[in-house]
Length: 630
Image 1 (tube, helix red, strand yellow):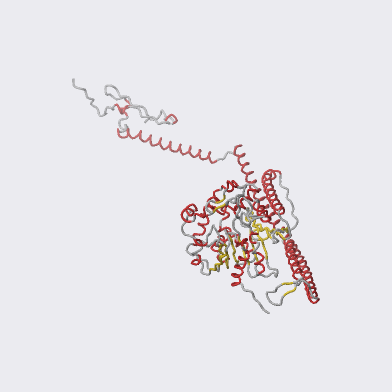
Image 2 (image 1 turned 30 degrees about the vertical axis):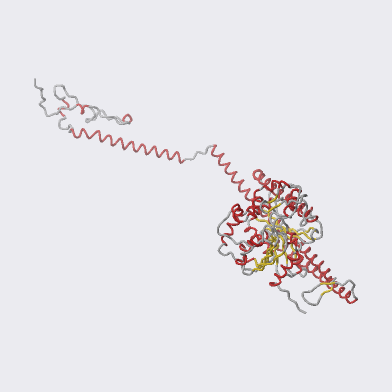
């Protein structure tokens, strides 16, 4: 049977149209519509027979079209989305507001208090450090002012004593003036000497009165300057309990450091005084940033030459440089000669040349090299670099008021003299070297091992010296004495040599070395005492700088020539530096070269002091001639 159709203008709603609309997530929160609304959300009732309800029949004209029915749910979704977005914005704004409000919890307060105390402690420590630094500097300046008077007085006393001694001699009428005294004096000679003594005493009295007057005025000026600057007695400010607790640790560290420095200074002074024996003056001066600060008089008569111990204060590190200082009796000099000793030697190694140079009219400065004698001996071998030592000598020359100096070196001192010239060319006017020839700076580095293997086997001893084996074997004073004997030609009881240039020291035979003609008796005891101060580690550090010195010198490889006059004194019996192989090319690198040869071994200064002195006198006489007049 054919399917019946509904003859009506009303279309039968499909199944999809009869399904309920989906609810919004927050539909439960929406306000319900009024039940009195005519266009409510009620579903229409449709009869099974296709008829319509009376209500539907009456509302035919107001029934929405199918297109209108499908658009209503979409509009609800848009409104719900907008409401949801506004709600999210309100929640996000509330969250930001909550985060912007800082809640002062107890933990945060405690942390803030701790940070505040730490900042206060650091500030207090910084203030105390600045105050301590300022106070120490003032103390150093005050100490310098107190000690400078004693230093000048001691210098004046020595000069006056020399004046009285010179006044007791007769003088020649020609220049240079020579002093002489006959065995038996004539009456006129006695009268002349009496007049000289009287004049000397009058001069001494006048200079002493001028000295006192000058220092009285200086002290008065210092006192007036202090009052003008408002330098009143310091008013101590008592810190609070909290500041005291915070600074107690800092004060203890400062006190410990000060006590340590004081003890080290006292130990150095005791060591120096325990070996001092005599009549010459030992002056100690402290230098802070290039200024003299402190000097102390002591005596040493072993070699009857005055010594000055200079203490250089460089920031935290204190370097001690000891040197022999001498000047002509007249108080005037032609030039200042720096005498640089070698290994293993001391400043007194020039003891036969110093009087000769003084008689020639030169001022002398003979330092104990770094690591030797009374000078400091740093463990770090970088401190022994040629470049640093050259800068130290330039500073010392500046403190002595010299813009140019004469360098005179033996052994390592000769090698150092060549290097000082390159690093401080404006400082050097003349050079004198003994035994060690000139080696020009190279552009390419050759390790010491390769240098010994390929070119100079006679430098094999340097491999032993830098290895550390010698320090392990040489520990006690007796060991130090054996070490010195091996280097100065000592032998065993059987006459066996204990040192060779190719191998170094025969350490297995230490203890059997006999005294050498070059170092014995009083000289041996003095050298042993001085080398026992620091041991042999410092002197041996000079052999550990091959690469460091090369890097500092390679910039001079393009200008290797020495342009100042140079005297080279060659030892013909030197086994370590034979003349036929070591000095042939010196003339090419040194245009103004003078060569003198002596029939001695490596220790020419003590083997033939007369020959060395004559060679030095001839060389210096050409450039610093005597002025004679009738």
